[in-house]
Length: 417
Ligand code: GCO
Ligand code: MG
Image 1 (cartoon, rainbow, N blue to C red):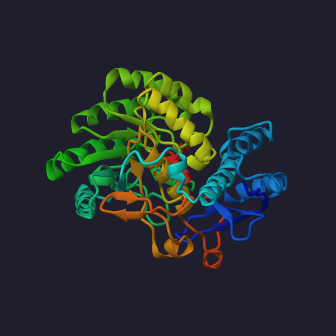
Image 2 (image 1 turned 45 degrees about the vertical axis):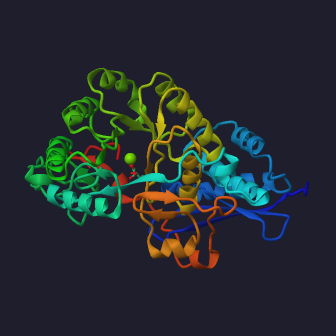
């Protein structure tokens, strides 16, 4: 058996879709044999890069890339403090790259290393949105024509439309669906404002309109995005029960998961949570006590493929399916990693998919085939996707806090975004 060693670890931050993406490339002693990984924590991209370059790279050079499990565990404990999103993303970049290398050495796609195909295509959902219910239904019809059988439906993204282009809400503002938003105090501070109550009222209206205009033959998802007081989320979940959602996402933030017991007692609307999780204690109790139906982890924020496959297995044992987080702030390498796990596990639920622009496709050639609401992996070895450094240089990182995270409610109070 040929002996390989890690020769170099490189980190690139690029923004082909105007979102900072963190790419890791692990080079081996065999010329041309390298692995790619996603370490994208877009709101803290540079911090992740520093962790890899300063701490992980010197430690990894000379190591045998085959020992993925050991490398994950020893780098995870190497900082003593652990299970946070910045270091986990750094571990993820390395971890995915090592799985990519192992697949290339074996001349097998990663899903084969994970147990082979449990399905022939990965069912996807895409986002639909609009600033009126009519616009949302129009977008849903478009998605159906594209072949999607599952769609996420938001009215004005999270918390309802209503910010003017300066991000500041003027005093008396028409919210989604003509719902009056509350008047603000004077001297409003900067922020992305939304009105909790107007939002909750607008969502029931939205789903009533969707079901009466689109019917029952489409699976609907809605993301509360942890933006409302817990009791409001329970109220909303009960109101939405009659619309037969595929799942309702993030009713509560990770800091207030104890509310889920009350929610479970009052509604059977399927619940999905997890994109903000980074610590095993975030998901362990929730899954073991069957308090969620879908685990929505952001794979790089928990540390990559190695922990994600274990999380999927825990879910399988307790009847919880996967719905990995797949927004625009994950690189196509992370997306490919999703699909390899989705293709092989038995408890796959659904996969969030954010269509790629041409710039992304140039920077990340190869990858899965997306067709009529399904993703199909090729038989290319490893993760089956590449990275073009020259192209990436054309899209320098932004390195700034995205405005949408600076969420405030009508009186200026900062809230979870
Ligand atoms: C989703 C998410 C995203 C996040 C974003 C954070 O369900 O796709 O909620 O939209 O807000 O990924 O950076
Ligand atoms: Mg979400």
